[in-house]
Image (cartoon, rainbow, N blue to C red; front, side, top):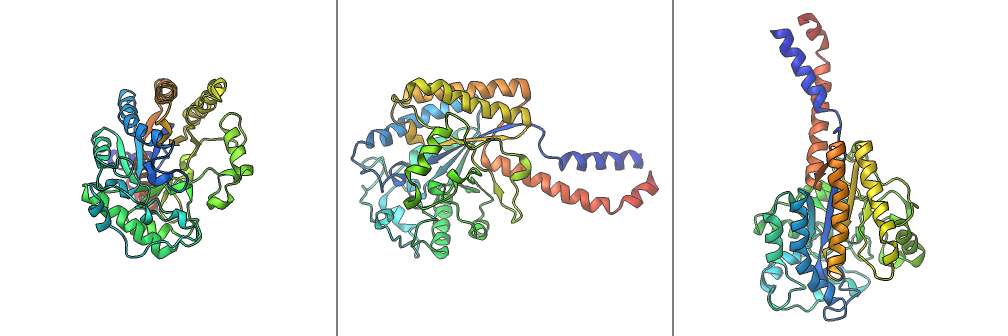
Length: 365
């Protein structure tokens, strides 16, 4: 009996420390409303249609996710959690970034008093709706839509911003463990600040020059044009993320992006089938290679042409549903990926420690 117990224990550890033997679709959404575009678009300008449309699109996106039993991570700007301007100001950090480009300063943005009279700067009711749905993770998109690559920001200001993001989410009973950096401006060297704030995973950038984190001033046409083309033809190579790429030496999990889900465009309507084929190919490759395909977008991308965007998303989820049936593919949010990978690593450590007692096992066997 002792021999059988030892063998079972060994087999259990061996199974636990293996990387997951299935492919996964990961979806994340950068939920920001006007806070994410305020340096580009006026709150009452033409893009307001998209911002207000996002509020209508979000429940429909959630319905689709629930229909297909799909998980998602909603990386949410901390300002949106506030029910009033007074509450938002209560969480303002003492240290703030002093961006050289003053257009980036969100604290100077005029806003209304609450969600009723200013629906593009408040979204507590929408956050509550998301949190109630199955398999939906509320993550942080920083407190103020903080730019980690822009001149004038500092480590101290980022740490203070992150603390405020965590605190205002906790006010709503939510503990955030994942982060998406605004404008994908990941900053190497800030990982320790994430860990101190209780964040365990982040969405890193695709490993190609065109997706490298950079300040806004470097987002030239020479960078943006290839990125646009990459959504139709393969310029950046494979989009599958391997499980063994995720856990970093510092203990954080980089659940990096595979592809941005571009919104529907009437100008590029004839290319929609090519765009779908590109995404579908990535999902199928992840299913076959037992890796991850991480798709992301902003809710306000669906704020205009909502029906067309939802229909395209349905087509994407149908591809996933097929891969789930044929290859056992799963849908995970970022926190679930981090938990799986971290658990496997801990099991690996336990298994390694147990291997030191092999001679004792051999005596029993």
